[in-house]
Each structure stands twice: as structure tokens, then as C-alpha cells.
Amino acid sequence: MLMDEALSLYQRLRLMHYHSLFGRIREKPGSLSATEAFSLDVIYILGKPTIKQFSDFLGISQPNATYKINSLISKGYINKVLSEDDRREYHLHIADRFYTYYDDKNSFLSDAVKRLESTHSSEDMALFEKILHEMNEALNQEGDQNGYL
Image 1: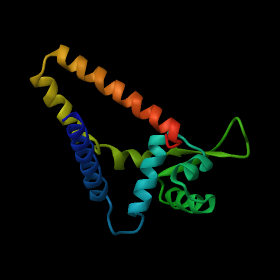
Image 2: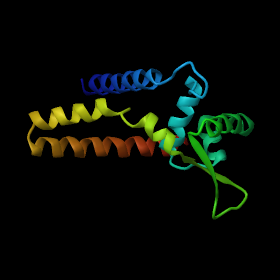
Image 3: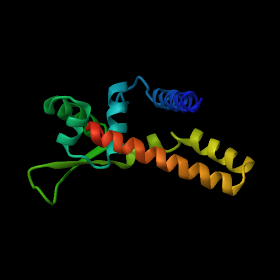
Image 4: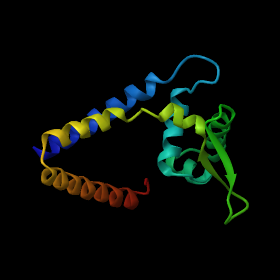
């Protein structure tokens, strides 16, 4: 039943992420829409992508990506920084405002890890860490092969 447990964990993490994400979306000027919040999350996880990398990853047109990016820039969540390698492209950098929004977003995960560390031996935790690392590597390879990571 390993697959059932892995799927259950994945679904739980997604639900907690959505709960946290939508809990920060407010209906007021300058706040993030759901689409902007997801776009910001993708930019953060991709780590300073170009506009093309962002649009390719989401499978959207560059004009659509540019529209989303300009909205996030105007709200102060990201900055465009001219590439040092290719002066024709920009990299998307996360602005300080993002970190106040993102700061405690993953506290649920940190709390769960601390709880595990307090109830399991350091040897068990080392094995668990090794297995998670191997799973992450397998997912990275899968993502590389399918062009989405």
C-alpha cells in the first residue's frame, strides 16, 4: 500500500498548500488573484526564470505571460532583471514583498517534520530523508523527461 500512502501524502500536501494559498488572497486593491498567486508560486519554484521559460512551463503564450508578469510587477511581488548573458531577455526575480506573503506558508510542513523528529530515532529519520531524496530525484528525472521541471 505504499502507492496509497504516497498518493494520500501528495493530496494532503496539495490541500494544505491550497488552503494556505487561498487564505492569503484578499479582495482589496493590490491583492493577488488566484491566477497571480499560482503564477508567483511557479516563478518562485522555478528560481529566476526568463519570461519564455515561465510561459513555456505554463504552456501559455508569451503575451499572456507578459500580462501576468506585469500585473505581479505592478503589485510589487516580482522584478524583471536584465540578463547578463543575453541582453535581450529578462529574468524574473522575487521581490521582498513576496517573502512577507510566503513567510509562514510552509509552517505546517515544518511542524510535521519536527513532530516526526521527536518521535523517531535519528537513524529512522536519516533513512526517511534518504528515501525522500531518492523520490525527489526520481520525480526530477520524470519531470526532465516530460519537459515540466
